[in-house]
Image 1 (cartoon, one colour):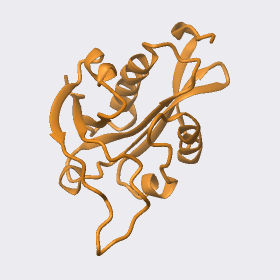
Image 2: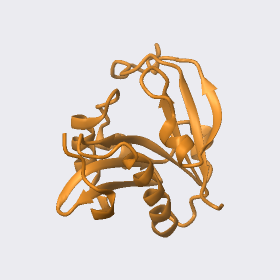
Image 3: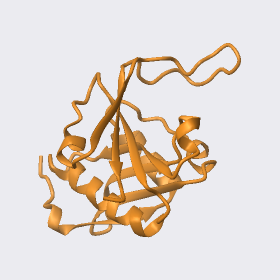
Length: 167
């Protein structure tokens, strides 16, 4: 399959609904994310990686799901999804451009976090981008007796990666 050269690409903000739709098409493990789960956060922003007028990758960021972290100037990369035309190093390239954009678009953010699903990913994009492995978490369901949620999309352990924007 043909993969586009990165020098042709640019990163721009996109609407939450559009990012969620593209994520549903391309995400390897977590295709479902509802726009309402992004929009209700203090911090929220979505980016698209464009080749001309075509969106070829999306990133969805919002305040952290963890309530303790949500009180801090932190934003969580909730989803990153690439179309098949994005080259192998394209996700790391995209992440680096997102970090630069965040510094301008939401200047009070000090850190970006992201959770890696260990069942399908090795964390290569984070290591290549100089993110720091911060925490390993065992799987725990989001469904509780007090609040029923959608079915768990993944039952894998997670690794939390962090990137200090102030570097």
